[in-house]
Image (cartoon, rainbow, N blue to C red):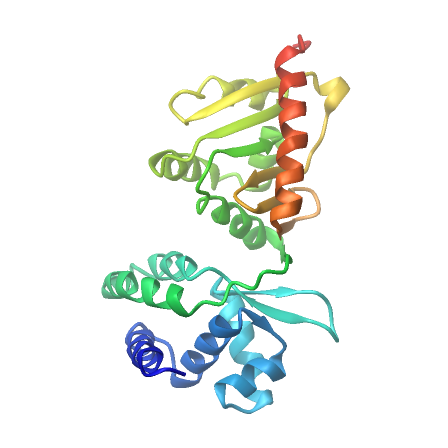
Length: 262
């Protein structure tokens, strides 16, 4: 590691411990960021810790939303989430430690400088209500308009208290949405708020094109939220995302040209 990288690592390590990370958590998190992804053995070796210690720490990072799990045992790997997720985690803890939020602002740019974004595609799985919220939170990192297929009725049943605040935060971030939505009472009501919630909606006949899982396409990601199976998936692949965007544009043209039955 170059002298400049050593200085960065030392500074970041101190800041992470200032916001509540233990020494071992700090070493593991920074090792994961530098690798981008890896097995428990690879990450603990990089961090200079015992493998048995690594499991609990990495699972804790997953709980914090700072890492995710890709694949199944015995080939399971831990993947570093973008450093911006630290901001989200610390803001969730803000009521207990408001100072930590301010500290995160100085940490994230430094973490980004050492985060190794591995080029190969990755697939991340999240389960349960918290998993569904986590994949939705990731859409707030989008740098472009989101292309989405959504069944509003199923969304609101699965996460009844989540979406009002989500719509507000997405709009405040200036992230626009184009949504293809099957017609039902909830979908019609949501479409009435398109202007204030920065959204264009194409309503389609539910009897012809009904679907439940939601699909959002943005940047180099495809997010799938299976409301009934309580499963969230993020596929990060430039090639797959570009293909899905092209398919979406065809669907959008068809949806806009249809005269749906209400």
